[in-house]
Image 1: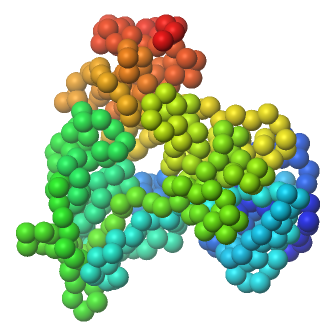
Image 2 (image 1 turned 60 degrees about the vertical axis):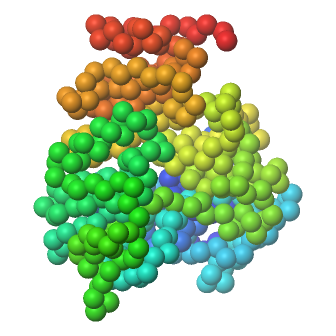
Image 3 (image 1 turned 90 degrees about the horizontal axis):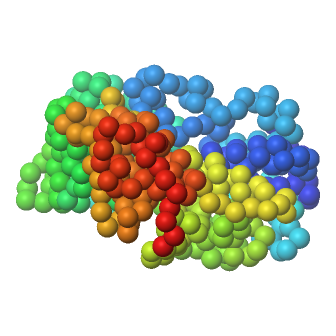
Length: 422
């Protein structure tokens, strides 16, 4: 994509969803200064969520997941540098310099960190055996896809969204699948007990073995290759492939080198500006104030979602251009697990009551979360209209009273009313 650098350039470190969106938004807002987008992977920037879904099922390729064509980057005068890791960086109020592992120097006037996150590793005996996989990038997904082809049994360590999505793909491919979760319930950090229990029963109904409260002693193997997962108590789960999906850690190495405040990510304000007042950060690496958590506990939150990456990147771009910026978008998430689509609007942490709308046995229902009578979130399984109604209500500052939400004869959209001031 060229090798020119410019001291008046915007340097974006991380060519993920947030990085591409930030570059695109700068151009949409009329910015004509040079933009350099640098990423460690050798691929064109691509969509990560599909790696645990369509990609593993063979329904998508790396090429089909790319955000933009090479021609788009040329047309927008965005220099895309792939396969380059930034190893050193320094700056002052007027700009700075970054250095790549290959020795290339990148002078810049404005800096954005969209460095994303990396899989949390398990320090277990046997974790380095062949057949033990993580899933975060395209190369890891391709390796896992190849491994699944010849596997008869698969153990998934971690019952979060990635673990459940991988289990779904492996089961669809005819594999014997076991999910091993250390906590007492699945996706416990993201959903409430009703939704969590539903997914436990749904996966078991579909033939997946799910083990909760499961301690792991080691990953067993023979001749350098995995054969199973040994649990506390002596039981061994047979496995030709072991997938570890126990969360991610934000990439903050460069932020720390710059002396920025770091706490579960790069700490930024509502404008996506870091503690030095000039660097911006967005996406999975950024810990930002969120208006939907401000009235209970800590108002800062690091979110891992496409929606957050996109909206925060737009905010960061405006900040770099000196425009008014304030990130206040309602958080939302989704997880496709075969014929089960979960959509989450808002943040349910801190709720004091719930309303169940529909019957989980039908695999079509919604759980609405309330705090002091005000709706704050919803888990919606195969009910997209309920999801959109709650998301729109939260966006517009409306309430859906609990008694109205429980009435299946009314839609949630028509039940939304102005909030009564607290």
